[in-house]
Amino acid sequence: MVNFVAHHFLRCHSKSDNDSADVSTQVWFAAFEPSNKSHLVATCGGNKVCIIDAETGKVQYRYTYPKGLLYTLSWSTACLNNNILATGGTTNTIVLIDMLSESAYLHYSLFQGNNRNKGKVFISSILFHPSQNLLFCALNNGYLYILEFETHKNRIVNLKRQYSINLKCEIFGLAFCEIKDYLLIATNHGLKGWDNSQSEDQEIMDFELPKNPNEMYKDQNENVIDSIEIVKDSWIATKVALHGVIYIFDLSATLHKTKNNKCVVKPNYTLQWSDTDNYFMSCSVGLDGKLLACGDDKGSIWIYNLKEMAFKSSTFDTKVITVNSVLKWPKLQDKFLKKRKKLEVDVYDIVMAKCAVHSSGKYLVAVTNNNLVCLYKKSTVKK
Image (cartoon, rainbow, N blue to C red; front, side, top):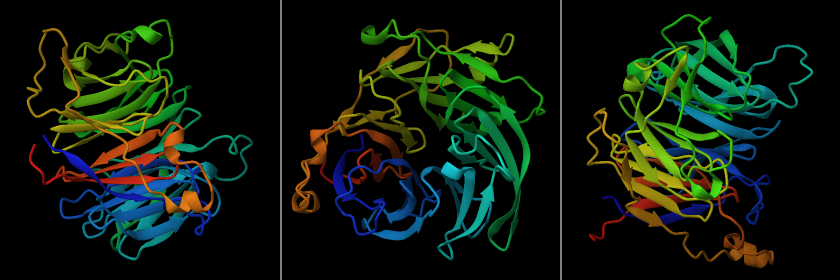
């Protein structure tokens, strides 16, 4: 099992570049550059995207969006020699960042012309198709946009809308299962699905997840999906708020049980997690599906060893998996807060909004609701 130790804690998303004691800016998302040779991780929150070297803890590049806040990002490998980063948030504008020149070179507005509701609507999730020139863009008002693009001179160009779908519910996250060419959509009305191989006039699939097993909240009727990740192949990890567990199921087997655009999810594995009543703490998978990490609202990161999982569908009962280790929040010496006579961050809930695991399993990153990017490194001490 991989063990991690605290490596660097950065406060690099402050609204003002000179405010090292800003603990109100929320950092929402983190994703490693899709290259085994790269240690770079992209984070977004407040009005900034930061590109950080997970090995050294140094910020390599920082982009400031002057018009609003940024909530989500996604890496593209469509250009052979240049990974392009897309980000978005308020103002419904997709920003493309060129890593070779370290510059934002394209701003694409989803709403052309006047739109009365655009001030209340924002981009909640953005995701590149892993092998096609497509970009999925979800808005909090329930619209999913499928955009196509071309590549030219190591850049993504000619971004244009292919079509849009109205799910009529809030969208919180996206995950793409390449082996099924299938988009999974996390919403406040459960888990939805979109078959990318079919025509645009298809009906949205509804996945029925288990009833709440958490005794504390078993009478709650909410069905908020606050995390969705591809584990490997067609195996999916999803977390329903207040359930206190993370479900892992086989999408291929589940889709075979479709009836009237609905299918019942019977998880093959259930990972025991926190019984928190907080929302929006998203997990991450690394080591080719062998490791899963998910933060909680106490500044801790729950780590699961999936190495021994068979990843084979069966009719047997769901297997319950306990957590292998929990990384507790370290005691930080924060000279900036002391100078400003502010309370330490651990006085309040520390919500780990998103974890990211490097493909090698050597690095783990978590971002928080109090403006911290937490870098952990694989421990060299054998236990």
